[in-house]
Amino acid sequence: MTLPSHRKLCTFRVGDLYLGVDVLDVQEVLYHQEITEVPGSHETVSGLINLRGQVAAALDLRVRFKLPERTEGSQPVHVVVRSNDEAVSLLVDEIIDVTDVATEDFEEAPDTVPLSTRELIKGAYKLDDHLLFTLDIDRTVQLDPYFTTEDHS
Image: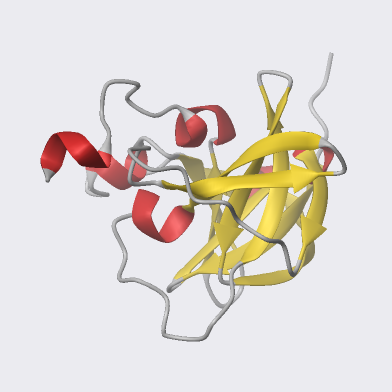
């Protein structure tokens, strides 16, 4: 069995990071969605959203990647993905496009990338003007179940 020579990635920006996930893993993209905060939840969990009757967690990738908070008044975009057969909203700064990438342009993240980032990405595609990091969805949504913001206050 041969691997496909190209993949289509839904690409987005979080801070200065240019990230992507396979388009087949994206359920939908939402631009305006009410988030209900959940007291005591993990710091990455901004709250819960209602997806036509289905409740999904909204995870802030800025927090997950240890980036500064969004500027006042800027609204995140929800990239709703599937992980372990559940919908999860990834809060990103901006949707870029669907990008076609060549599999031969992929490289695993080097050891020099900080572990906190390396464990969340599968690797990077070398594009003409930048690197496109592929997000490991399952690892990104896997949060320490014993950590809550109440534990660290």
